Amino acid sequence: MSKEENQKDVEVENIEEQVEEQVIENQEVSVEEELQVKLKEEKDKFLRLFAEFENYKKRTSKERIDLFKTANKDVMVAMLPVLDDFDRAYSEIAKTKEKDLLKGVELISNKLKNLLESKGLELIEVKAGDVFNADHHEAITQIPSPVPELKGKIIDVIEKGYKLGETVIRFPKVVIGQ
Image 1 (cartoon, rainbow, N blue to C red):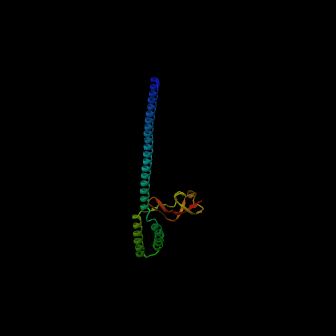
Image 2 (image 1 turned 90 degrees about the vertical axis):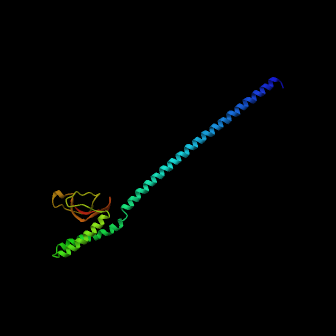
Image 3 (image 1 turned 120 degrees about the horizontal axis):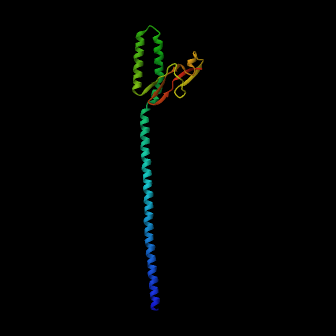
């Protein structure tokens, strides 16, 4: 081989080595970029999982608070007919001359009402002449209005309404005027 051919071979080898070095460097850079992308994906997954867990904690905490507020709802609903019976008994005994009996029924009724109120039961205040609202009242029947001012308003309250906390457990049952 001649000197020129040798030199060309050496130059070709040098060029091949440089190309291989560049390929290796490019591979290293692409591996680093790939790792950066994977790291970003994992960070994103972590943040989403963390946010989802925080939302879960808030939701369960709210559900737990709501459950505590209305845990005794079934007992309260079962006690409402007893309250109604006491009101009816009181109004009937008030018509008689038995004042001692009236005081006894009143004491027991007040004790029961106070106990239930301490547990969160509230009476929904409705009286004759109030405007009827289908979202807050349950209309039992409509009768002709005795006076024009009571048209579309409550004429009589048949059954009292109650709520437990912010939840209505029984709507007041009313008669409205036509």
